[in-house]
Image (cartoon, rainbow, N blue to C red; front, side, top):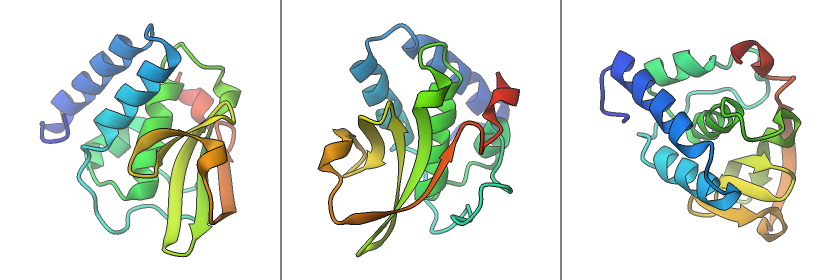
Amino acid sequence: MFELRPEDRLSEWRKFRKSIQHLDRMEMLQQTTDLWKKAPLVNHYLELDSCDNWPDPWTLLVDNMYCEASRALGMFYTLFLTERFDKRDLSVVIYNSKSGYDTAVIVCEKYALNIHHQDVVNTTSINNTDLYRTFDAEDLNAEQYL
């Protein structure tokens, strides 16, 4: 998907979101993780201190530049724009670890995506990190994208 032209990328992303929304929760999370771990990585795209300048879902995909935080944001938008989750259960969380910053999407305070080799993990397995920032749907003004 990420190698496609911007309009095709947006179309494929929409198809992907529709294809996963009726899967069981773990399969949906895993497929979302599998999709986004293919995103081309850059060193830096988003500022971690504030989400005020973070892109909307469509700009994110059109720009096609993904640091760890913007990949987590893409996962957040993917899940948020399905009809599956209570929107209050999703957040982008930034942890401060010995190796730098780790960014995850937290689902229902139980699962984390985009952390630990991009697998879906239980949040109890996130060790040796300190919570740095949390951005929820309200912080991201995500309701406007529904």
